[in-house]
Image (cartoon, rainbow, N blue to C red; front, side, top):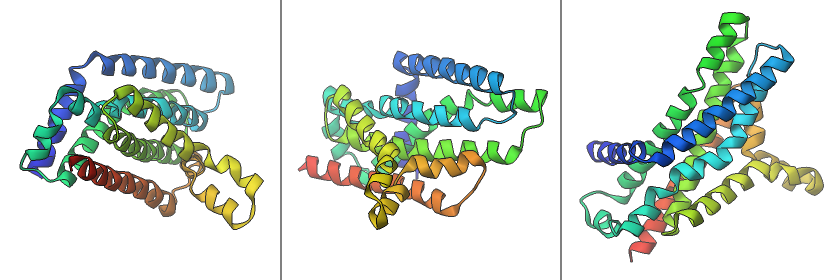
Length: 235
C-alpha cells in the first residue's frame, strides 16, 4: 500500500505542477457553470438530471486529457525503463497511477458541489437523484480514467493516447445507439454494454447494483489490460 500511495502522490504532484491541469479545470468549470445556468435557469426545476448528462459528455474529452501522460510521458522522458526496474509490481504501479488520475478527476467534480448547494438554498430538490447522479459521474469517470490509462500504455505520444482514449470512451458511450438496428439478444447485449444507458439510471435517482458492478468491472478490465500491455512492452 505504501508503494501505491508513493506512485499516486508522484502523479498528483506532477499533475498539479502542470499548467494543463489548470486549463482543463478552468474550461470544465466554465462549461459546468453554463450547463447549470442554462438548464436549471430555463427549466426552473430543482434537479441536476440534465446537467449530469452534459457533464457525462464532457468526460469523453476530459478523461483522456487527464490520463494521456500517465505512461506516454514516462516513455518520452526516458523514465519508463527506470519504473520497470524499480522494486514495485506492475499491478501496484497501475493502481497507483489510476488512483492519482481518479483523485485528479475528483477535484474537478468537487468544483461542481456549489450547484447542489444552490439548489438546496433556493429550492427543495430531491436529494436521492443528486447523490446517485454524483455517484454515477464518479463511477463513469473512473471507468474512463482506466480506459485512458490503458490508451496511454500503448504509445509514447500523448496526442495519440488522447485519441485512443477518446475513441474507447466514445464507443462505450454510444454502443447502445446500434441496439435498435440490431435487435434481438445482440441488441440487448449492446444496450447492456453501454455506459450511457447505465448512467441514465443514476441520473434518474435509481441505484442498481448491476450498474455499479458494471462500471467497476470496466475499471478492473482496463486496469488488467494496462498491466498486460506494460508487461508485453517491457519485453
